[in-house]
Length: 99
Image 1 (tube, helix red, strand yellow):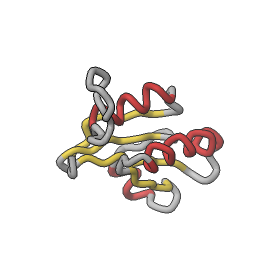
Image 2: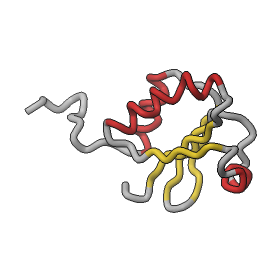
Image 3: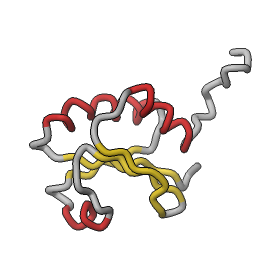
């Protein structure tokens, strides 16, 4: 899954972004490839990805956007979406016994 990445678009002035960022950071800490973009610091990238609201997370695979989430997401939904596109290999499957 080297070709998968999660791009988190936010802004310093955005209250919901500040509330949501710790959840995204936690997902990054456990192994997901998250890239952070401040829309005010990189407006060209934000515009090229048609970012109209923040926070937004784009999921890219093979250089193309395969999914987009706008606004604060439910933590379980977000974690499931990350796992769907980038399964962490060290996590045992629900049906597999832990070693």
